[in-house]
Image 1 (cartoon, rainbow, N blue to C red):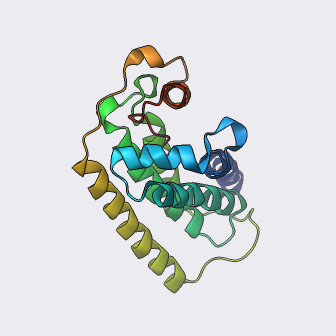
Image 2 (cartoon, rainbow, N blue to C red):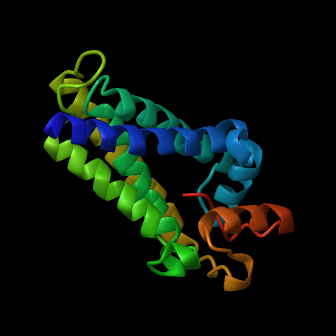
Length: 189
C-alpha cells in the first residue's frame, strides 16, 4: 500500500511539474515559451533571464519526468524542491494564497518533493537509483543555484500583482494576463 501511495504522489507531482517545465521551455500546454518567460525572469532581476528561465524549465521538466518514473532517485525530487523554493520566493510579494498569485502552489509542491525525498520512491518505479555521490553533487549544485536565484530575486523588489488580473485559478490566469498586457511583475512558478 505504501508503494502505491508513493507512486500516486510521484505521478501527480511529476506530471504537473513536467508540464509546467514544457510550458516554460516550448510554449506547450498553453505556456508562453522561453523568450516570454525569459523576459519576465529578467524583469524580476534573474539574469540572464532566458538562461535562468531555461534552467527553471529544464529543472521542472527533467525533475518531473524523473520523479514520475522513479528513475535516478532522488534527482527528480531534488530538482523539484530547489525550483519550488525559488518559485515560492518569486511569489512572496503576493502572500500565501494562490488565489492572490501567492506562493501556495510552489510551497505545496516543495512539501511533496521533500516528503518524497524522506519517504523514498517506493518499489513501483523504473530504472536504477542515482549513486550517493551523484545525489550529493546534485544537491549541492541545486542548492547553490537556488541560493543564487533567490539572491537575485531579493535584490529586485517587484510590486504585487493586482487582484483584478486574477481569476479562480490565480497564478495561471495571472501569467496569461501578464503576457497579454506586458506586465512582467508576474512570473510562472
